[in-house]
Amino acid sequence: MFRVERLIDTLAMLPLAVPGLVLAFGYLAVSIWLKQRYPDQAWIKLLDVQERPTLLLVIAYAARRMPYVVRAVVAGLQQTPRDLELAAANLGATRSTVLKRITIPLILANLIAGALLSFAFAMLEVSDSLVLAQKADYYPITRAILDLSQRLGDGIYIASALGVWAMVLLILTILSANSLLGKKMGAVFRV
Image (tube, rainbow, N blue to C red; front, side, top):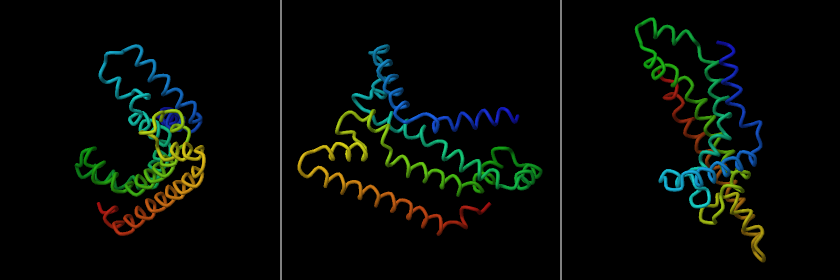
């Protein structure tokens, strides 16, 4: 069992070892290959980077930031007393009931922390945005900042203002989540 756990852990951490530009070009290559191989399929249009990159950007951001959530959840699981799960199972609770009523409430704070960390890093992701967002209509904030910084005249000032706005939005997101967790911390750990 130990080898399987290590293999899963290694696979979950793999996106941290591969540069974002390499993954983004890989997504782009797969998108182009699928478009050429299955030109008449309707579901291919969802993965077409040149037309609508939104779904592929979400997939890229999620895949690149998944290790942070995995690490946070593993830390929560390691800190969770196994006795509570064993006691619930001993009293006749099924595995799904134990998961729903014991394990998830105990690791919910870790899950939220991992999701916040992932969101914070994904919000200002650069490498995936540069490759996958090819139309100005679909530019994420980092690609819009790059595009605006290259504009003559007031471009640098607008890009700087947008960068400050992104940092403020990030700070507000983290503070509001912290406030939410602070108010509901008792409810998070209630079994």
